Image (cartoon, rainbow, N blue to C red):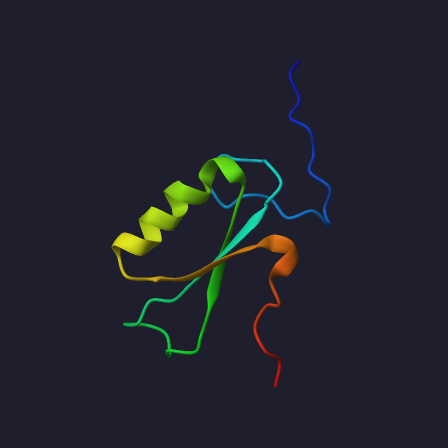
Length: 78
């Protein structure tokens, strides 16, 4: 019986479909038709999927920023 390793619940994983690799990048984006300009949604990416996910968001005009996970400050809290 093959069992996939269970990721550490504290370690974020890549947002690419089916990927269970730890995330190294944060891709900040928003859809201007749905979100206010300052709103940022995030996808996480491993090194292998960073470019693909960035292109997917970029071609739609959604991609706002790509930063290393450990450098991500997250959204400002009120």
